[in-house]
Amino acid sequence: MAIERTLSIIKPDGLEKGIIGKIIDRFESNGLKPVAMRMQQLSQKEAEGFYAVHKERPFFKDLVAFMTSGPVLLMVLEGENAILKNREIMGATNPEKAAPGTIRKDFATNVEKNTVHGSDSPENAKIEIAYFFRETEIVKYDWTGRK
Ligand code: CMP
Image (cartoon, rainbow, N blue to C red; front, side, top):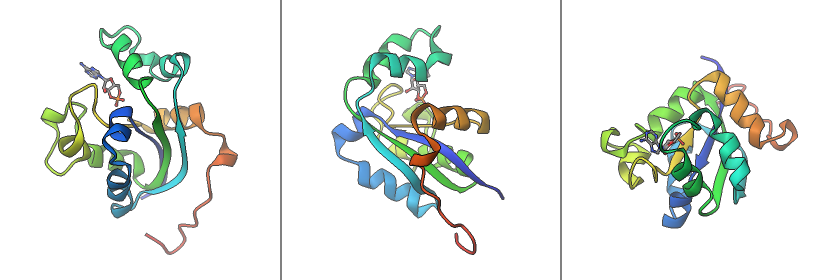
């Protein structure tokens, strides 16, 4: 299995609820290493650009308003099969449909305030990581002989 990188965002509701530590614990306990992290207040432009693929969706305006309503924690997670693994740990987009024991099932309020974002494919992971991080801001973790 290849070591992958994925972009993770703890959304404003996650910071508001004070559960950053609990969320990162789930990633680390499941073999995902944070290799870059930054707290940031997204501007409207940054949020619109990040979610540009959704710009025709009816929820786009509210999504951008929510994502700019408070600071977020941007992270690059690295690990075996990181993209899919992160999505399993997060659970379904709508917390009502999320499996027990997932972040969204346990912490999310609704489909908008759903606590975390994670890249959904290798192509999007590359694009999303590059949207927020320069390669020099990502630490090099030596996976040789480690899990
Ligand atoms: P995220 O994984 O960050 O990607 C797009 C976001 O749009 C999604 O999580 C949801 O938080 C948000 N969103 C808001 N309303 C909806 C909706 N009706 N269907 C899907 N996503 C929605």
